[in-house]
Amino acid sequence: MPTRKPELTINQLKDHLLHYFFNDLTQDNRLVGLELEVTPIQTDAQGNPKTVPLVTDDKMGVVDLFRSQEAEHHWYDYAPSPDGAWRFVDQLGGQITFEPGGQVEYSSATRERLYDVVVDVATALERIQKILAGHQNTQLYFSGLNPFHSVQDVGLQIRKERYINMDRYFEMIGPFGQKMMRLSTSLQVNLDVGYVETARKRWLAANLLAPVLVAGFGNSPFHEGKFTGLKSYRAKIWQNLDPSRTGFQKGFEDCAYQPCPVQQYLNFALDASCMWLPNEQGNMTFDGHFRTFRHWMDCGFHGFYPTLEEFKKHLTTLFPEVRPRGFYEIRSIDGQPRQFWMVPGFLLTHILYNERALDETIALLEPIRCTLTPMMMEAAVQGMAEPDLANLVKQVFKIAMRAAEPIEHPELLKVTEAFLRHFTYRNWSPADELLALNDGKIFSLGQFYDLERIHQDLVGDAFKVPV
Image (cartoon, rainbow, N blue to C red; front, side, top):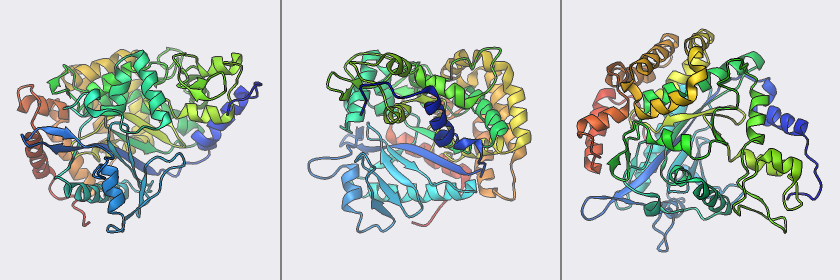
């Protein structure tokens, strides 16, 4: 609860960030984790896609199904999070959680080898799909955005105070926040921060890579059944929902910038608007007032000041392209086609965990640092159709491939090479294939499944796992 007297100091906040978000810059185990979001979809009697609710009165929602089948399937347990949110934990150490629009998220445990993470995720996805397919043939849709429905169609399916306040906050700014909450699906790659100098270089490289990742992996050209004119509409959503809490840290694009991730992230957090503030009774809510956390610390609000607990909650509402969480969470990537979701993790792991590749990437991309924000929009709109950007994508991906160990990851290498041949080296991202194969019009679900079979032929059975 907030207090009547100011008690927080900047040094307290900095110490908290250094310890919990950056591991005191004293660890580098080179662990890998993946977080993957997908949209459950059913078809109606006419074959049109329809939303799948998380819970229903007749206990036939997605969460209901997982709850009812827990005893039958011994690979997961219901373990709600401390705030009571629905969560299932599997035997692999991963977690199944849910987003406000009904999206299903699988967060892997961290592993020393990327291959082990990929097998974990592939196993979990097969098991999740098996449970859902038994209910009106519910399928998992892999993309960067639910392309069929509006925010009104989907609704706010998690009616917890956090999401109600967040929904109200974003609605006051514009339409993009609700689209992010209810429609977007991403792939996030989690890599260790590292020691002091390595942490700075990984921080710099991961941020510089943002437009490369948007262009190379754009996979959300459709919204509400129509072509948006962009290759990654999801990226546009993130760029427009609230500049105070998204994008890059203040000063990152300045010519005199020097990477200092802890201090820069602290300033970013302090200058972001609060999603909830105390009312006159001290209860936290959003009532239409916009104040930065720095302003609340300095001036109070309704006579109340934040504690460290309020700062911790505030940090969970920040969504930059690279977010420290005890590791670097790289957030710029659209959800990928079913057969290729492991490719971004393969490339990023070999860039950020190989010193030579890391230095080469920074040297290649440093010249674009001062224009990252406009490049992000160009990447969202044109993607690989912009020649200079496509050239950068190909150069970066080649750096990663040179750093790869073929003997250690032959299956991953095979899938990644198939992706590069099919998309990157043709100046395509997955969005370009969707647009080319259907003359710019949105696919039916049947056509998407046909496309998945084409992709399956490209990669074979590299990650067919027993369930």
